[in-house]
Image (cartoon, rainbow over all chains, first blue to last red):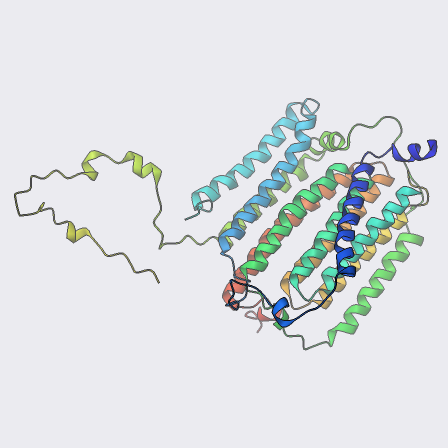
Length: 126
Length: 213
Length: 104
């Protein structure tokens, strides 16, 4: 028992791994058991798509507007900006004014981009 | 023993996901493979003590890049299966090259130039991973850091230039214009006589809306 | 922490992933989106390489540059996918062979 606790203590993320493993296993089991045990009697009506009693008119794959994509791109850029902010916020008292200034320069550069996209109207939904 | 097994688990997951990506005929299945790959890679990073990077991988790749891929797949009306598949002439040579490359890499990694058996583990109490990163990222590596800011700026401007098409057939609200409107330009005072209308000839300025198609 | 795992194993995993990405580019040569996904695999293999080295050498530099790789990958994808949507709008396909306007 002592040996196992020695093994487990070092990495605190092991608990998360166990959690993920158990949840994946449970989900797989809950899917698998009915699939293996249920009686399967397929008929044409049973496996056809149901849409208010009609046949489906066309496919469900409609194309999106490009504007969604533009929003996704702008999101990813600012996502990365925030990713750089996390370590900066953790060490701000150790890296002095130089670290502060370097982050301010970084933010200024990205703010220029932000102003550009605002002026271009990329944020407007129309 | 346990960490080695966990490494094997994550490595298998990464390779299975990669196999799914390169073999998938359906792009959505390829996306699923990408998710599997990156979740396992995040686990691998956390196993190697790079916790911040692992979580960043989940945040950026699964939270943003996967969404972007899906948006593109939905934006273009994909008839993925109807891509022409004719010339296979390049295939044997290409795969041979890739196999030779893999062999060389593995030889170099295992019997190669690097002294890969030396392990230098940190001694003593180490600060948190994110603090270690922050301590050098904004001081020693300030130049690459600023460069990455410029790369992000380029990506932002490039994406807007490439995809943004301002629509001219839509009426927009300009709040500034709305607020700065004065009484003189918005209002005409008339004293209409009985039965003659206002006399300002509104009909001259009125245009019919274009009929929506 | 590890008992038998050495840097060689990590480098081998990285090499396998890299070559799988290359093989994916060769196999899906026509499809731009599949090629972009395989490029992501190649970049991930480099990241794994750096993080593994960072662990076995007890040096944080590998993780820093892995972070820069992440940034560059995101920027590259943003532009690349924008080009794909534009290309699809102009040519109605995402086959690479359709991009032949500059071919003499």
